[in-house]
Length: 257
Image (cartoon, rainbow, N blue to C red; front, side, top):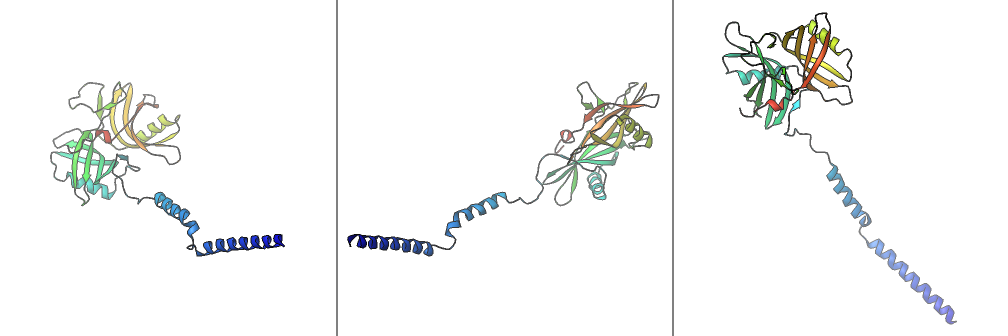
């Protein structure tokens, strides 16, 4: 009899505990068990949310396409409208820099306004503000003479030495120039060379030529850059590349000059 009573009491206690457990779970706010994971998920979603795609101020970016659009020509002409004494002809836009507005680097042919003046080539740095006003920051003489350090220097204004480098009278890429470049590139691969401008020549036993080229590596998502490409054209009609010097347009810019 005592054992039966003990068993009944144990059964009653177990039933009471089970009822308490169900009541506690039933009275809990809906979704309480998932509150912490949900909060963590929301926090992660906020952390991983993509930022707004806005331009970020920073360094210079090479132009993917150097060709001049009507908009770029308008920026150039507006910035140089009040300058006199030198005629500037824009050839290409080589790079931009996002600031409070935009900085531009243009390659241009410069010709002093006097009879028989020889053209030179310059980099023209222009700032356009957020209201569309444009002004020249500075000019940099185009470097074309390769030196012993693997860099290029501008042609001195008083350069008169026989056999020295001279700026090309025409920056146009003729069929002959393109054909010689193609000959010189025939044995090279890994990058595409697009000639942008014919800059300078040097008479030797044949001729050295300095071309500005856009070079695009043959890789996924390539980033193009600009370089001075030196082509030797021999007297037999052959051609070869003798040197390539990368052009850093940002390094030649003097802000506010």
